[in-house]
Length: 379
Image (cartoon, rainbow, N blue to C red):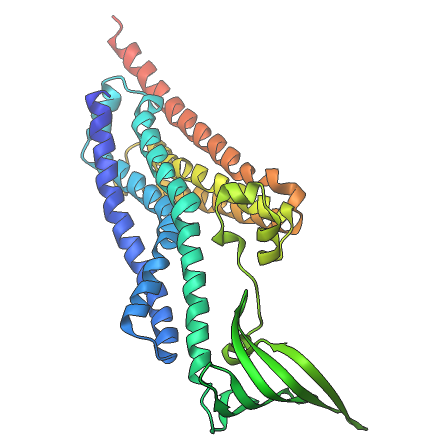
């Protein structure tokens, strides 16, 4: 690699490290504060909070790196222009296309980092986070399973356990679910067990009865049903949410491209939707070189101004926002209709075209000055 390329690349990598560290810290702290409040309110320790925030870090980094690459190239190009380094390079005969080579190498390096994150680290971290959340849900559920005490784990929910056997069976269980005023259900069972399901802890009641009161404006009705075995999603009841399966983002990209029945059953998704998620990951790293090139090429347009290059910076930000807008629009279209997954690659193609146009305009802007200098030098 020529020395000039190594110099530009080293400048961009140094600035990229600075901006990435700052942006990741700000973004991660914001996420960590919300997790800290949620976990500490559930009675978790500081180590659990640290573990959860660490598992969210790969996702934060994958989102921040393209923005850090854009900021590094825009700031670095502006600094080299203010210190006349860019002028000296252009006077030496380096065209914008030639100067863009180390920037492209830098962008590909950032794209490779994003690819490693979105295809490897982020799915692994999300899967581990989902498992830990299921374990914590079971622990939180166990805190409410105390014998001889009426407990109220959620608004409108009452639990009473007569006793707990040595093998873990819950004896003489009473559970009332009055969260829906129009439908109040009371469960009684001789025995019950807490088992781990795909969506969290499940209460399996044995030899019991359900009494459901339907309350209406003009009449009320009581339904009584006896059962030998009944499953009840106690984890969702205590958390105050609904049961849900695993997320597609918890699985590796290759598995999403060829989803098996186990994955589809766990997520409740279709094969087409799984492939859309895989193509989103494949397209995401392509935007990193584009973000870097937009920050560089836009600042090459226009001559010297004592007011600075704020206009070029504004246009660079507008270009980056436009590419991100196309990315969001393509993702929405693919989510509504999985057969439109090729649209996910349109933002990368549009961004590439924008970068080529900016470099062409930057090279075209230098031609009249060259021609004028040649005319003045002629005898």
